[in-house]
Image 1 (cartoon, helix red, strand yellow):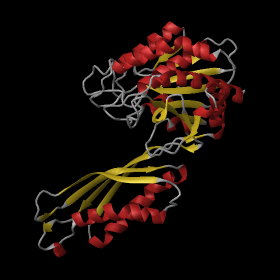
Image 2 (cartoon, helix red, strand yellow):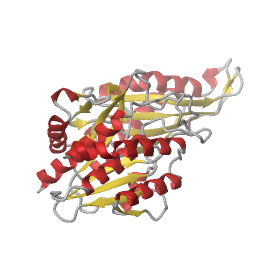
Image 3 (spheres, one colour):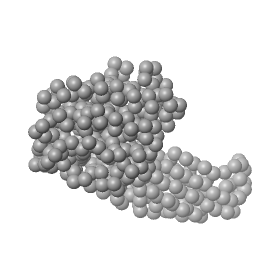
Length: 385
């Protein structure tokens, strides 16, 4: 029954994806996309409510039984599209380069499929979230609006161009990392490069932080928990013969585990001060905790695995690794058990990376996502019943 329902809707959902792809919108500005999703849900007879902001909406199917949830994202990225697609972006400087257009079409398709099942063993909320690419993002806004309701577990898929269409990647535990930001301001009296001994050398101190901090973190924390420290901005000095009075460093620190993520801010700050202490430079550290890691629950992964085995076949399921990228789906999985599933999207054109101006996906992933999403939600309802 499920495959037949998916086949009936697949072509419509591909057209929906293409329409969204043509008219991408950035975080918290997805008004046209929200309207388009609402119209599609109207055509399917699925009830929904639009968020007060006018971006994002929540659909609901089923009348009784345990509630589960499904999350899809609406926003695009500030990139100029460089593909040759017939339906390439018509909005200069914005494109769907992360598959959110496909995720949204899959979410509408899942709602449509489940709405046709008379003996549904529970209820499902389909969350169409704005601003996944922003920080703070739309997941927090949806939580404040109580979008989850009484959902007991939640599912999301994310296209993965390293897997072929028809395949999925599953992992229990951390599947994405946190994303914290830091700003370090180094200050001193400034001086002449001919006499660095008469001042505090801010450039020298910055160099010590850049070269020593990551190594020291491995001596202060358990190296079995993956982490990535990277500096994205270094700003200081205007003349070759002047030691500047200030230097600013900015970057990100990503952690793939809850325990270390909860401890790392204090360790990071202390190490910066220890590194610069011998130089006489003063350091001000602003460490901003960002998005938590997504921790896939064992029970939700088991439900997805069972659904995939039944409807996609045993060869479709592949183990996957933890991404050092971040996903604000963690806002939901911090509240209730859930799983983020990698959805194969690589076609004949090979692997085009996410967030690339030339990103393309195999649209067969849409029907796979609809089938997997619908079957998994039913499994989740049954497990919760």
